[in-house]
Image (cartoon, rainbow, N blue to C red):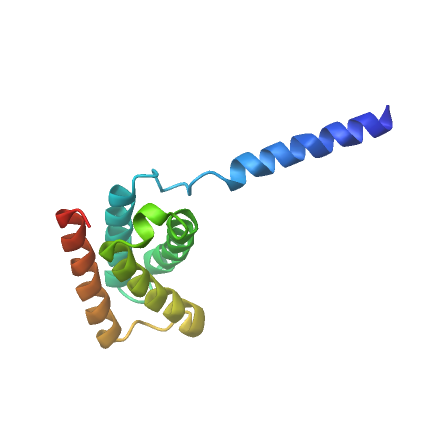
Amino acid sequence: MNRLLSRLFALLLVVVVGLVGCSPGANLSGNYRDDTLALVNSLRTAIELPEGTPEKMTAQAEARQNIDDFFSLYRRDSSVSSLPSFTTMRTALDALAGHYRSYGNRPLSPKLKKRLEQEFRQVEAALKRGA
């Protein structure tokens, strides 16, 4: 009886982990265009908030999580991985994630902010074209 319960528990655990681990992130709908535009808007908000405020810290933590969720959902999706909007978005996200990983709480440099904004505009233009 004890052995049966432990196997049942293990099976239940595998099912729960499988269902939770395979679902898109909490803020992602599975629609690439909508998810990308929402991510761009949330990242702009995180970048533009004044330094040292609690909102900035929360927005940065949320941005890190959103970047991870976005990559985990779309990185291996062959229908979007070759789109110009995705490759540009990946470049911008890599730069921002690299800054957060390496410099933590330091503010973004004006040069990086300018580059990110330029790439975000390119992503939005490519999405309008359907690419």
